[in-house]
Length: 231
Length: 90
Length: 120
Image 1 (spheres, chains in turn purple, yellow, green):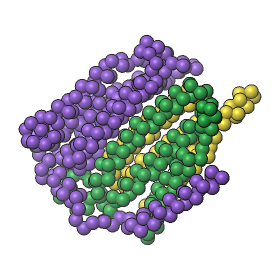
Image 2 (tube, chains in turn purple, yellow, green; image 1 turned 30 degrees about the vertical axis):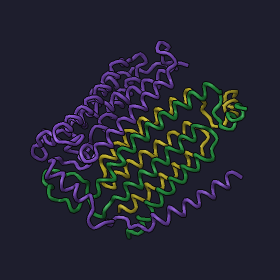
Image 3 (cartoon, one colour; image 1 turned 180 degrees about the vertical axis):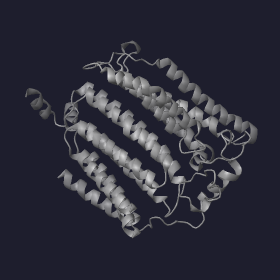
Image 4 (cartoon, chains in turn cyan, orange, brown; image 1 turned 90 degrees about the horizontal axis):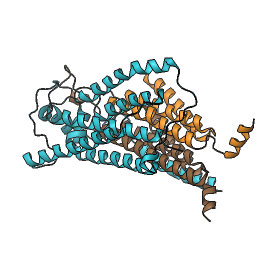
């Protein structure tokens, strides 16, 4: 009985969504002149940044990025609060059998290469596809590989909390410095160089480096909390 | 040529989605969700969005799967728990 | 010839949303419900990025040598929105799964009809 009602509701939803979306053109422009032309032009002339998505995420809509960083921080804190009973009841990991020597030596070789790839991706976020979020998750995947291969590998949880909090504080401080110089929050106040140079874009590479550190520390802390939960 | 590639990828993705919802072994359903994320990353690349493809490939395939697998380790593995008792006796 | 691509991409993403919603509404195990919500996220992100595609367009990056090509680039605004949405979707899934672990420790079962019975 419940399944019939659910299927009826889903059919109504399918009809509604289908009428809207199958009437759109795929691959044609929806407006002749819109906001995207302004963004694509101002990226080259005002900001000298090659990656348009980076300039939208950090500079033109930077307040949404501040909200997203807050949501990630709240999620990591809530996870730590739900899964830990008391601070000193952190259990050890229980493994069925230890890893073979092939896995251990292979992961020890791969780990510096993954960290280097992650740092490269978030430092060059304004020149090629990439940025803070992508590089941060690549670094967290590297730490996950080491945590899975060795059962006594430990990352100091205090150090991760300190890095994450300091990166968040510096992001807000940069916003306030823009506020004091020009009058709006998160405004660009450093000189922008030439296009396709590493030191171009004003305050954008600095903000992305801070976001990269913050996301890497946060996701590593989440994985560490979930892996070491005591029964 | 792109048309055939799109249609094949979309059919595989829909098949994996139906399999993930219907299957009773939860570990297999989680792997099917990982397959959905992987094909979604390839589709984002074909729609000329490289930043979104990088983010989806890093988050959807690696981190979501590991969090699901650790949850399954701490709780049940099969959807009906009568199956768990039946399989542990054999 | 492009008519069939339009039906297939929009239609496949609408089907993904419906399959995920079916799994979230009908299934009885809590982990299956979280899997269903994750599939709904995937469908919605695909609709967003597919709405910004322009036929014959290229990625919105001004590489050296292509610096005056702004008229043939795809729309960069939906990509910036989807970037945020993917990370937030992962954070919500992680918190939901931690709540599932706590519920299992308290009630020793994961089916929602038995948890409702234990309350009374």
